[in-house]
Amino acid sequence: MGPGEIVTNELGEVIPIPHYGEPGKDYVDMQFIARLKPNYLTLPKDQTEAPLDQCEVDKDLDGILKNNDVYYVKKVFPSCWPYDTLREIYGELIRVPDLSQVYLFMQGTPGKVIDAVYDLEAFSGALYAEPDLYYYYGSIPNDDW
Image: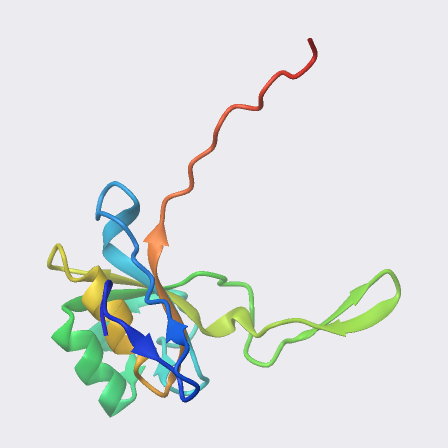
């Protein structure tokens, strides 16, 4: 799948395929973010980032990452632990997403971010994948006339 491709569901409804814009302008080239299911990627003990070849990686995921020239992995939320999903807010326990498996992947070749994102979106061990998007901040209009 790719941008501009028409995909339909079983009801014949068109499913939009996202277009992420231009590398270096709309997102950081040579890096992307993905949330994996537990046990597909394990960093070395007591580390929050490491070269890919020092990590324990599921065989299928390893093939996808190497095919997309990923060489380095970094936790996006280094203080989160697996299955640490309960928080107390205003005296109530609520369940929050497990963010311990969200990683920033760095690539050695420019122009491969979107390919990596689509490959991981199709992989059963990934919950989501996306480019590392830039955020733009506009000015606040002054409507006090």
